[in-house]
Structure formats: structure tokens, C-alpha cells
Length: 323
Image (cartoon, rainbow, N blue to C red; front, side, top):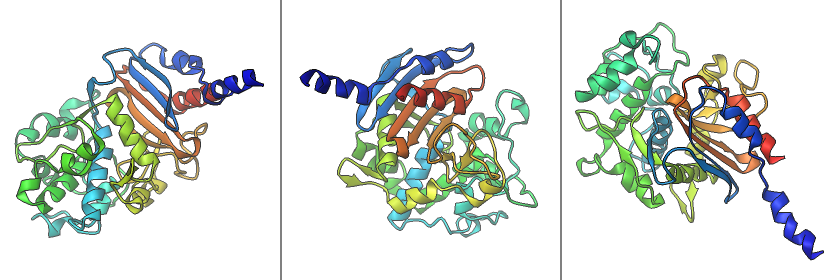
């Protein structure tokens, strides 16, 4: 009897890494770190480059961090997602901050990197306009006739500029740390443009150990340890598929408010072998943080991939290892 009792924890929390490692070791998949938490327990971790304290550029995972910061600001009554952009800036654009959060402003925006960098708004924004004002560049672009879901780093940086304008001067340079990073013990770097606005689309640097804290915050409905840092109501909004994404799928998942989701888009679940409640932060070159509440699971992968990873096959291989 005692022998069986000793074995139970092994079976309960055991993880077979072979399906995961076999999949990610295919040609072109360049892992930097793989970490899996089941509940509060780390059931797998492997560092291929650096260690748990090494900071990584998150690229578009930064967008989800920016959404959390917007949510905290709204909780504090500093800003409203219902506000129209032309009530904050002098512009011919007419969309709401909610539509920016939804990536559905209607801005004519080219979000491409490798295939056509000279025709890319995101490349121009990040490497030229950041020295001036990213917001001014994004607001100078034309609008499409109809709004739909269209992935745009410009949308993120406009709502971050709107948030910046609503803050007291003494908080403009420190609010990510004051509201989110310091209360969670996160040691982060967050770059700003020439006007002092945080480049919320792309330029957060964070370690794997601190990214897992963000996963726990989401898994625990906005609570970190004993403190409610962001309201459950905002997180529900941010992690519910938005009406524009319901009509039009893009990339490999559906979309909420700066978070990727597995909720049904165009009538079907995007990742067919993954639970529908999966929430993800995704970034360039294969960065990802998945939170799956129904499995009490957090899966972090930091990478520098040369080809596109199938998110369905990747997370399915993690789930297979749990069986």
C-alpha cells in the first residue's frame, strides 16, 4: 500500500516529453526554452539557450501585455474602451479604442516582415518612425471602406498612445512597472518611441520565469497570489472572441482583444485537437505562451524558428504527453 501511495504523484503529474520534442525538433524549429506548468507544478522544462532568467524579446506577445495594461487603466477609470479616437487625437479616423483592441479599426495596414519588407507598414513603423511618433504614422494612413479583423501593430500602438495621453506626467514612464511588473516581481524592459510612448506592439523583453507569472495571472482570472491586479470582467472581455474575428479567421487562431483564442471562427474551432478555452500570446519566430484553463495548463515556448510551426500539432503533442 505504501508503495502505491509513493507512485501516485508520479502518475498524477507525469509528463512524457517525447511527442513534444519529436515535433519541435523537426528541421527549422529552433527552441530556446520549453516550460510546462500543470497547476502550480512545473512538469517539464528545458533550456536550449540561456536560462530561466535570460530576457527575450517578445515581439507580438507584447500586444497581450499592452492589453492587460489597458485593462488596468480602465479598471482605474482613466480610460474607456468605448471612447472614439477622434475625441483623444486630432484625426480623420473614427474608430473606437475597442475596435483598436479588436484589431478591427479599418486602417490600411501591411503587417509583413520577411516577404515584402519594403512595402511593410510594421517594418517602417518599428525601424524608422519609432524615432519620431509611431502614433502619428499610424494615424496618417488611410481607412478601408469596411471594417473587419485585420492584424495590425498600428492598432496596438494607437491605443497605447491614447492611454499615454490620459496619464499624469509622473506616471507616463513608469506605469507598466507601477501597475503590473513590480506587483508581480517581474523584471522587464519596455522600449518607447521618440515621443515617450511605449511600443506596445513589439518591444517588451522578459524572462521565461516572468512570462510564466503572466500565464498564472490569466489562469487565475486576474489575481496574482493574493492580489487582484486586473478585473475579471476585463479579462473576460479580452479573452472572448470579438465579433469581427467571428466573421473572419486569420493566422492559426481566432482573436479577442490582443489575445489569440481557440473559440470558433467561421463556424469551426481553429485548433481542432486543442481545448476551445485555450488562450495564447504569440510572437514572431515562434514565441508563444498558452494558457488552457480546462487543463489547468500553462505552456511556454521561446524560439527562433525559420519556418511556421503548426500550433495545433504543437499543443496537441503537449496534451499527448499528459496522457
